[in-house]
Amino acid sequence: MARETAACAFLPLGPLAPGHTLVVPTSPVADVFTTPGTVPAETVALVGRVARAMRSGPGATGVNVLNASGPGSDQSMHHLHFHVVPRWVDDGISTWPTGRSQHRFTGDPAGRPAEAMAVKATAVEQGRTG
Image 1: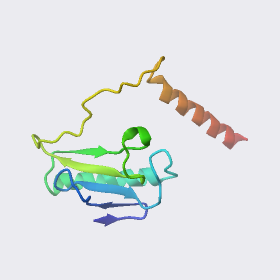
Image 2: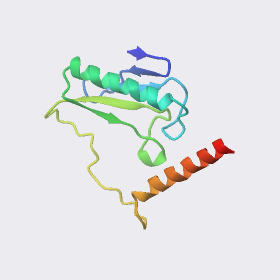
Image 3: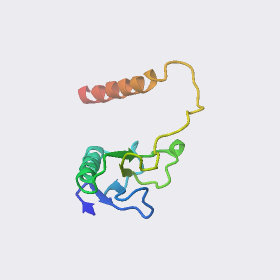
Image 4: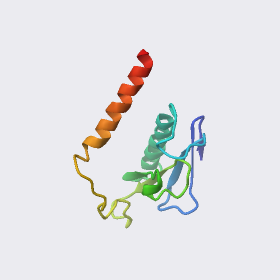
């Protein structure tokens, strides 16, 4: 369907809706955790172009962009990929999770990713400054 330097888009074997498209980086990366450099931004840029085409082409009124990364996410293909699923009002499908995680831990769950990002940013800055 579309091939660019960093990413390509193609139709899956079992589409969820007419026009359902997979967008994958052209480099061999397993998931969002291991994707290097500008590959994530370039891949998501193609996701955006595919989504906009779904509005103007088949007249979708919305899209779902789906990704599963890592063993806890039900990732079935170990190559980073995004499903861009065109949606229409009352189309009869639901791609939104219907349950809540049973995983629990103490402390502020929202603070943990922010803390991890701050630690990573500090380590990167220290590496740059010596």
